[in-house]
View 1 (cartoon, rainbow, N blue to C red):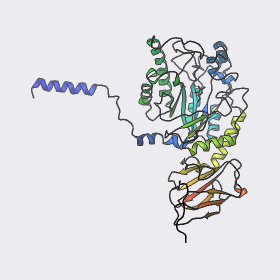
View 2 (view 1 turned 90 degrees about the vertical axis):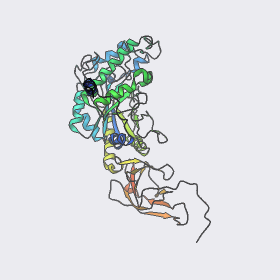
View 3 (view 1 turned 180 degrees about the horizontal axis):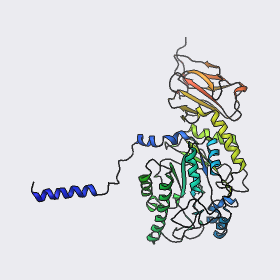
View 4 (view 1 turned 120 degrees about the vertical axis):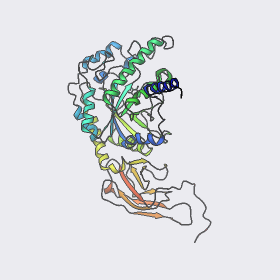
Length: 453
Ligand code: GLC
């Protein structure tokens, strides 16, 4: 090779090795994603926390001024009552763990722009503009990490209605500006969001980021894929919910358990404990522990999680009704632990009048009864044979009868399992049907038997 050619090649090599590494990474395979999502799919219950200046309890979180229920001035005057004077993050975390939840998601910033941490990107925060005068997020994060056993999620609103560089402020009323007419102003806002997201993502390394408010703009306007890539760059295993125009990892239906199993492999229903996200003085319509346990089991039976919300007061105390509900949930979950965390979606409805799940191997079918059975319960269309029936959380085994189990019929026999009153759980009884082989089902509409013995 000619010397100048050699020199040229060496120079090219040097340039190539100094060039920044390509950001174009291999796309994540389904198996890799399943590994990343593993803790989420086993968690089943998460506790959502809405806490901000709205926690004084007079008006709804952010929406109150956006919908014109209260002036912006009155809304922000609530900053003076956000004292966090009785805030005890160790107790919060203890209670969340006691509820049986395996993750928690806290509003680091809602649509009103009030940040719970000491953001350097803006002036609206617990530190700079509230009576608390201090960072209230970091102590919570520290406790979650210190006590262990809980994954940390941070809710972050893409929307920030009060900011001058954010286009929309009131629902009824013109936008401040058009982002396509004033792209620089919009970019200024996006840079602000990016700066805040970097602070929380790099500062706290959350296990999950829970976006909200994507509906006001399109993916290309927010640069949703860019935001997701930026988060993953420094926090590669972070799980991201879907409210980033669908660029996240899992679906988030809200305030209603799906009726059919969602198409998305991973999902979570978020649910209020009464009728409000943040604390409201007048909202005493708390759901009963029975209702919440049903919602949880309903989600589990359809392969999803329940993210149950609590709303601490502005002083940091958690309403007693909420404490009691979480404790009762914890009692039920700890008794039935075997039938909670390691389960997956159950069988198609119709085989039994109960919610169902399966263990990982598919050879234990769990049945959850939110009612008192009369004498016995029926299970039909189950081809795998039952070898044992246990009452979960007790040492009791139950007797059953198998009717019309005819070996020349393709319709399997029908099981009647006797459930005596003294094995019932006051909230929801769970049975484990141990099967000889992983569950297989008959799902037909019956047949004529053309041969009899
Ligand atoms: C909604 C609301 C909000 C609430 C959230 C929780 O999208 O905008 O106020 O925080 O749902 O899921």
